Image (cartoon, rainbow, N blue to C red; front, side):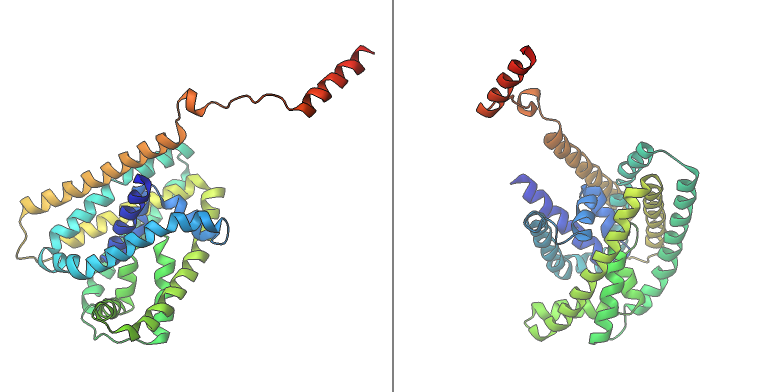
Length: 317
């Protein structure tokens, strides 16, 4: 039961990070220790359907709950305490760095990995800084939906979801679709269910892109894990620095440095707490005691006894 609730919470945080501008859902998945599981699931969605459904159900419940919470609660937080809320997410991202660095060190630090780290960090930092300015302009666009926009918007969001450090919401802002989708979500909550058709098209295209990109990323982790984890670490570093700089430039009348510092350290503490919880969960599943984990030797079957007896007779003869 606690694993189910843990996954619901993971889905809740991932949903918030996807909707929050500038935050990467994949980084939160890494923090929660489920990124590799999600990658395996979407790269082979038809394999072990029952197992995948059991894993995906609590994540879906948490994600749906977070979307409702974001529209109702977190939208207000970003409006009233924007800078402090962003600093909280910066703290969350900071706490994932030791997790990924441990994987980099485990697979060995190579020159190609260092180059990949620098390139991915630079790319994500550039996108965070440049798109941060563009997102504010696009956020005021008039909300309107079309099937064509939902199709290419879904593909763009799905492709960015599985890349650690890439913010799906910022990509949607760049395309001018972020406020449109928030408007649609609010309208659906008010009972305008006709917009569900547009959201359905968006979701189909998004999941199609997630499956395609997941297969590519999974192959990279299998064939070149040292480089892949180094690139992921670069994405995380570039994203964290870019979001931190963007947040410091926000004009927020309700902000003070005590609030900002508390939010930052609260985010870091939450991230490290989840990392510790995931570590304990892995120890509980893998590190069983000798009595529990030992394999009992079964008594030989009747056929095995007959075979042994015949073998002894042949050897004696």
